[in-house]
Length: 488
Image (cartoon, rainbow, N blue to C red; front, side):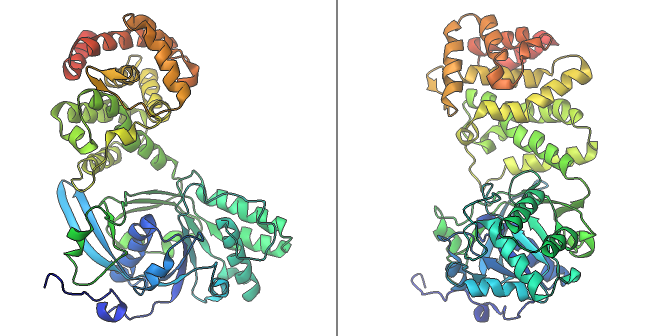
């Protein structure tokens, strides 16, 4: 049986022959979309009767939609992680994609999508660089390489085919990780309409009858498990070359425009999908707690000898340090509902403990200073403003970062992976190795690091100098406890 040839995954084999009406055109069929958006639509179809088929449009010439076509656009999603403290290890076949189109080789098929009667939504994930204007795309004639140009063509073809009918406008829901992603996409579409001299009534149709929804998305989707494919294949009684692995956590925040809630029954499935008037509080929550959690524990964890996020959060010292910092020093600065913040933080800690994902601290250390400035510094300064005193854990985290950039700790070289100007400036600062007051002053006053002079924060320079001395004369845990005791 070991060498038995398995049948390739297909709809007849999987009993997934029902044809769904095309309600969604999707740009980007990579790992994230298949583990996130396609999963959500598939769940809506199976749990609520949403009855939405997806057409997957290949975004780049080097894409691989043909591989999905070879499997009748089916694939297996493995969902693995921790949810509310419980291990999740599930698999399912995702069948929402009805067709995949390569617009570079089958442009007519792409244009024909505009004529689909039931089409209502456009989803996308073309990476952060996908939503960009390319002035070289100076003609309406395609195929176009640029993603917003493709969307403009799709909309214009639909506008012409249905004679500008208001009810045939689409809802555009991009999932690219940039702020105000839908509005950015809309502006570029309007730029192309102007560049190509498209009719004013088309521009008016875009403005009045198409709806652009900003989003915030969050899910780790490692994709095809190339390093462990055999163990996954053993769980299947068919061949699947497009299987995807995803974590259990999912967050999808969508800005509501013209009653999106009434068009997609997100509230009927048990996922964190929020349709809200303002997504900014949720973006802030993610940056300060999830991204900030990684960043604030990074230097103390590496100085303590940790290598992965999971190892760090399960370490009694680092785990407690992270939890106390988030709950006592970060959350109170956010001005959001306390229970919502608590629940979100607990979900984040579950994600950090995921036994199926090996997240190395060295990967988080990339551009460490700029990450600290964006993710942690606002919490530190906000805490000072509210309480008129220093947040001791965040201060110790900042001191640990400064110590990290000395480049070595004991006999261990530290992974300095930052702009050369940052590394060189810290090298210059650390020539004063035995004078912690001077190191603290030079590091905190460096505007190129923080966009401000942190020596003006009352007591911060002395506290950082004290923490640096402790870190150099004790192990990290003892240094932390001595530091906190001194200031308590």
